[in-house]
Image 1 (tube, rainbow, N blue to C red):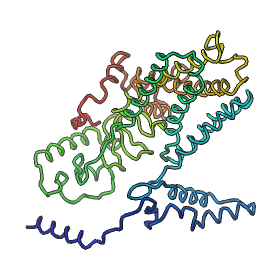
Image 2 (tube, rainbow, N blue to C red; image 1 turned 90 degrees about the vertical axis):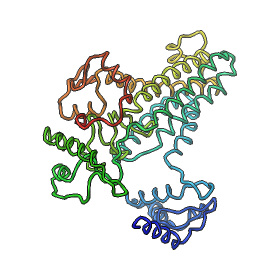
Image 3 (tube, rainbow, N blue to C red; image 1 turned 120 degrees about the vertical axis):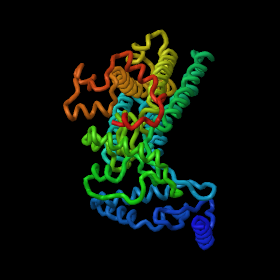
Image 4 (cartoon, rainbow, N blue to C red; image 1 turned 60 degrees about the horizontal axis):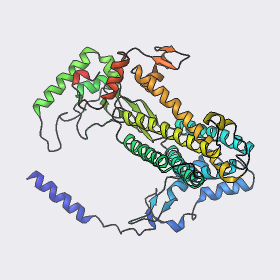
Length: 434
């Protein structure tokens, strides 16, 4: 009777709620909860007016004002779509505009190429540290990476292939490599192994355990094993209480260290909380800005696959391009000495894109090398950073290798464990949590 009454009450409340008018393709609900229109994107912006007035009068603009202006721009930057305008992330736009412009400017002269190709990594690192310090997610690097792949392939088709030095088989191999990169990136962007606390249930810890961990003396109401319908699984509750009590009795300090107050759960071994994603990840390696996601237990293999396929495809494309625009020279020689390459715009743009690809490939090769070393020593990047801060790791080769010794079981066993990541059951017994 109680359930029927609650269902009737919910239906009555839904019937009493006023139905919202459907949005047209150019309308949207802004951050203030009000209906707005795409055509009014430049209207009623006091912060922008104030910023322009201070800029015209040569007065400094407060950082808070700049942040409010950027928030307003990001909220109003939308494209018409069915059932309301869709918001466009402003961080994906700069690479789409700056990359083609800067590369074409760099192809005008050798000195311009040196300046532009030197400044691009500096600007990327500056933006990375800016967003990393604010702990913000950004699509800038993902947009830069995907657009770089597409633009390099476009230049290759437009400027290199027509010269007649690239055969159909070579073009097919390069195209297959590009599609494999995209496929591996798609797989790497999937769930890295997020740890989620079931809604409405605190099955990992009881009230006494939470009180012990938090040290605040707050007790939870109700049964920790009860489900949404009020039913209680006694067997599961007893097992969980026994396991949690065994954990606390064995090593209460370790359990307290592994307790995540934000996610409200006990992290398994080698799991960490990502400050950017705002969630705990199993066997967290690092947060990769190039895929705008964490690299964890479930996608680490796909991440390594994407890096390896990218390196092979990039080196192959660089080789084909240099062999076309700088004939009768080795790849290494042509990269540093290619006379007459700036004689026409086509070869100059191709040569500039080659050097841009070399810079990106060198950076990815360094990341790939660090990943191979960490896998060989069975250590994650997160554990390396913690070991360096606490000065508990053994540093080799001027710090290129950091061996914590905690999970290192030998080269072959470490790679075997990496090859079987994600194969074991996701729900580990309580004894293996810490």
